[in-house]
Length: 256
Image (cartoon, rainbow, N blue to C red; front, side, top):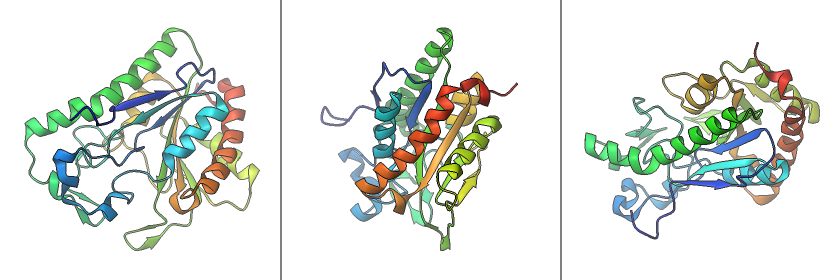
């Protein structure tokens, strides 16, 4: 790392008054020069394998409109994924979708520890400290991760416009889905689609949120819908409406 490299974690609107806490684990595709792009082309580094296109701008919109704190990662998920347990094979992937990640193949334990210490630990520790402080202060808290997904995955088209991923927070998941559909019934909204949360392959939901008893979910919006500023603003407006309703009555989505 050099002095020109970004911080591993950035916190925006830290004094936000909303009970919603926003994360963007795949906000950036930045890879330090010493890694030579992990052997990938510039075109590959603009793809979903390197980050979640559109997710960070939508998250910033939401932070502003909801008056919510936002925590963003500063480095590409290809270096180390801030939403994966360290033991997961996709934590430092050797292959993502159908692309070999040459700079990750055969790396040793020292390099894995370096990447954790410099790129993942600062993010997860900052999130943990923020959540523990809120719990200690008795502040109502709902944890939301902002993500995006590809319209086509390994040749298979995805029909959903957006999806919500959750595990223990079933009431939150149901409220998110119902809220978005109520705004626009024509939307195809995934219920734990296009992905499913597991302890083995996810970090934010099971370990940051559910383990603390905090209602937690990930929002996934299809990338072609938030590729440009107009789409990002439109989806931020929809999601602001949905999340504002939840923020006004956090007790209604608590699991008892």
